[in-house]
Length: 189
Image (tube, rainbow, N blue to C red; front, side, top):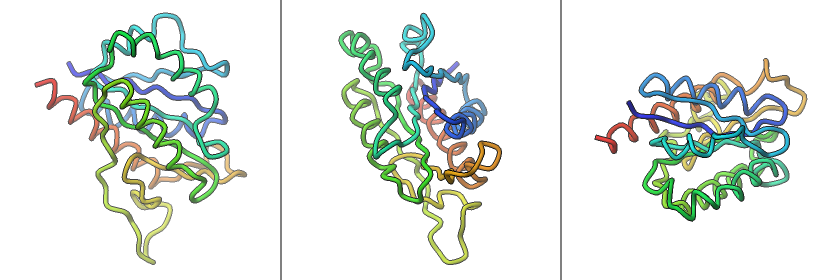
């Protein structure tokens, strides 16, 4: 069976909620698992080896001060051992991020994920969704934030994880999970 790994860090629970939506979508097509980076920037023992067995790796982090959280960056730096052995080469890759602002420089985080994936020789997959960009659209619509390179979400600074990300952002994340799993399955043949 096709295996999808979702590696993420969440500081306040909003990005974890987005990761669960990605998982829901990926699990509808393939075997999917969450790999949560802890508050110290570490994965549990043996999880780097598990990532080597995945067909796709989806990266997630909140956007803090215009980039991925330091905990995610620590994980990325620690991925130099799999990089040296080309353990993630030709695996499908994608990403998602969340911040309090409508823009919040989320694309900088997605760009960081793209660069990480390219360093590892992965195949990047974007959202593949049209933006919901008319006056009639709002936060409950799919891809309201208009992310092409990845799934973007908005969680207002005063919103709890029960309140945000909103329905449209979670559906966008779910659809990214579906897309990645379908493409990984096709590539696996």
